[in-house]
Length: 452
Ligand code: PFF
Image (cartoon, rainbow, N blue to C red):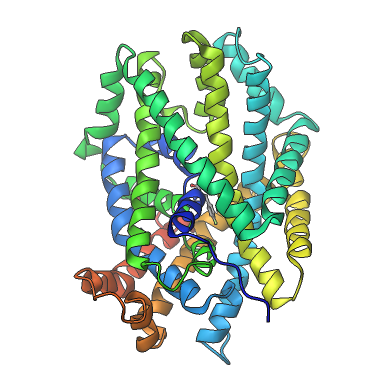
């Protein structure tokens, strides 16, 4: 049997996992969610969710992945032989392909904006023209498809190179650059007049803003941002070494992911406030408002290229991670070569990604359950499949897996001492996380709408 790939270094394993977690969810979705949900109050609950629900689910996925060194279906078959539990993996694989399809569309927009920024077309327009530009682009009959396809080809190229030469190398190289670019932006943003108002908005919680809806929004953001519930983190953990400390890695990933979200907020809100924009601008924030702001700054060309480059880096390390779920499944369960598995993954994403890319134009009237394909994939994966997967992984590790297996994983086969965090962690895995996730899930189904 050929030896299964592993991340070469502990740092590489962490960089790749952080690379998965850090993406559009942090840099684009977090500021927009925080903006819509009142800033500081949202942030407070978000951080609570990351640490009390997110870390337990990350550790659960780590335990299953690293403990078996298998793809998600293989792992569940090994740990629950003769049962139907591995069917849960099909939901994760389907969710990963759905997320990859619509996520690649937004990545395609980023490549288009990067291209426009490089060619100098992102400057010299009025605010209205930026809105029209974005609207015209996303509804164009083929341009969004072209960029989605191009993005998926780059994604394919990285994945084809495999774990060590592809994923680990790209992550090692890109994650530090990402931090660096964010820091440069922050230094600049903080020197703008009115920057303090942006910081106040983000960091001073207005407790009157706290509501079940804000709490649930923060929880959903934590799930998406940490890439949990669909076995993405599980798949990466299957490439960890037996000596990698799981609890510590989980904490590092959660802390760094939260840090990038915070840094994005610290970068974006001072700029938004300084230019008298509305923090509630929503998903358009990045594509319509920021180019307008960049052109007003000295060195605007440089800033806009840098910003979209940063978004590109952040998103490709996420798409390669979501692709790896199905690639490892095809390779190990269906005995495909890496090349073939990657081609199947990319082929599926090309078809559905192109259809999603047309959801804002030619196919905007094609709806299922009242949603365009793009919205449906987003809704069904994030609001239904992810929470269901999260409940499962926490429950599976908390109640089902063999106690010795769990001990071996949490203590690295007895080589590290049982940490003081073990008891609170197990409490969260067994009781707290599943109950809270059930609440999000019900909310995702719209069952609380009447109450909120
Ligand atoms: N965590 C990524 C982000 O914040 O953009 C999104 C993501 C990546 C979701 C990988 C799911 C996944 F499997």
